[in-house]
Length: 120
Image (tube, rainbow, N blue to C red; front, side, top):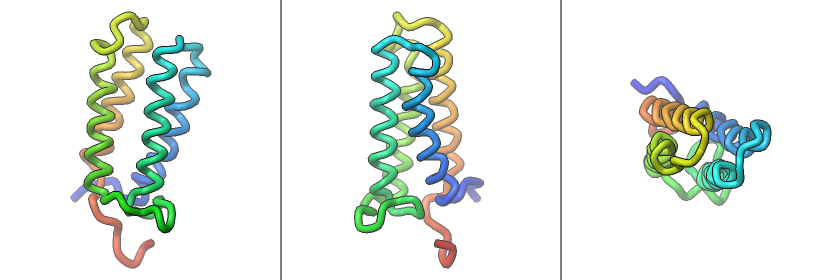
């Protein structure tokens, strides 16, 4: 049994989008790392809004949760690869990006694929 319900996963999605958008500005990152994070924030927000789960937006719910989780997995893997994809970034930036990736992968691997019935 997966530990993270789709309801909790949805909440984490929106919190993650905010975190991804805000962190580079708060930490004074350069333009490339900031662009990376803000693009990821926008993508996370977009595919969360259209996901068929409790936090999806009404008539826009067209993306199955399994596809959503696959997108989360790709995002997590890209963040984990940040030290190689962004070699000119400072070590602390690359480390934080990799930590975000590990978090995303752990959440993805531990998330349920179907909303609980009668609980929406």
